[in-house]
Image (cartoon, rainbow, N blue to C red; front, side):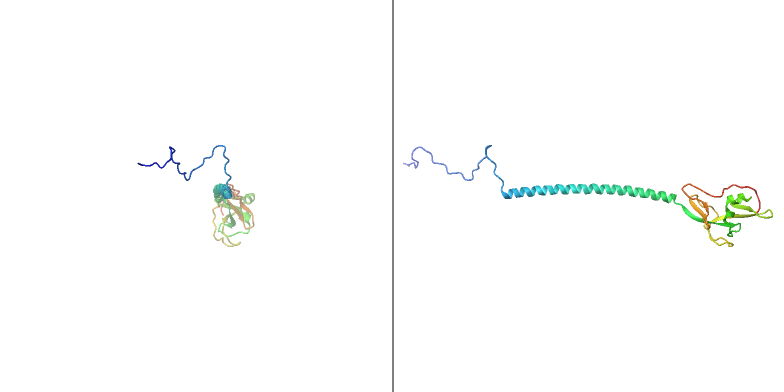
Length: 199
């Protein structure tokens, strides 16, 4: 016959549960964060603000760099345009030397000036200016452009073909024969012809 260890009809108590959790209800006050948690939160906020500031600075630098690149491109374009214009419109300078029909440099530059020759009864023909001399004859003169030489000697170098209208042409004495400029000509001599005569 077995004997029941329990006295009476009451069941044996359950052993206590380990690791049980307590739940907060709406009336429970939240626990204050510890000092370490507060410090960690402050550091996280500071780091977040730093990251935002760095991002703003990076955006500002990128925008500035874009503006500089755009500005540089515009500047380079304008400089190129201006340089091209000045290359095309550049005015050269050349010295004109008055010579006789044999290419000998003469003293008086006026002998190659159309206005002077016309006012003294001469004329212009075939690239020469004809100036009357005593006895009914004419001496012929013309400019050499870019050549050099002294009075009484033949000119060296240069050309008898007039330079382009963009070229400033002056004599050794400083008299302007042609004012150069972009599409502007100020030649002192016209191409008209008058009498026919010998040289």
